Amino acid sequence: MYANNEKFAIYGELLARTAPPVMHHGVVKEVAAKYGMPVRTVQKIWHKGQSGGFDGLKDKRKGNSGRKKIEISSEAIKNVELSKRTTLKDLANALGVKKSTLHKRYKEGCFRRHSNDIKFSLTEENTKARVKYCLSMLREGGGTM
Image 1 (cartoon, rainbow, N blue to C red):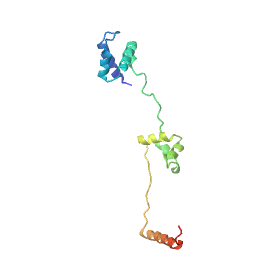
Image 2: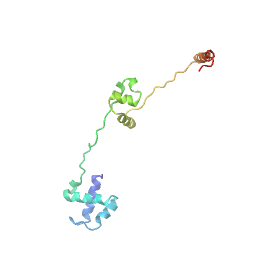
Image 3: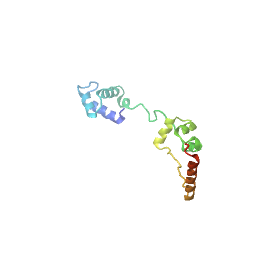
Image 4: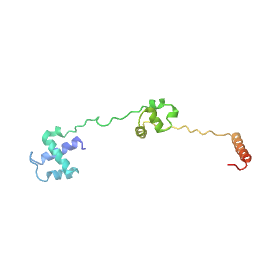
């Protein structure tokens, strides 16, 4: 797909190098080489221009064509309870969207992962008590594992 201004430039050059409706031999090849596009594309531009002028060359697609993006608000994610948003799959099920859609929004930066891995720190006294308990279990067990 080529931009409208590029198609206009090619058609203008073709018009300048020929006497319409007859195309001179080799002109299409030269223009295609100059713009670095296939000869068939330049021929299509010429035929569209001949049938509809510069208006025939305009792109028919509007700016809002294509598949619509599924929006996921950050509020909707926050409203899902914590136990149901531990993984992308759980969160996708809770929101009612596909996991791949959710992953795309994650990659786009719509939301970020958050974990609260605050490791508790044992005091010296608690560490000693824990080691003492573990050792007592080893002695009492007598080699059972």
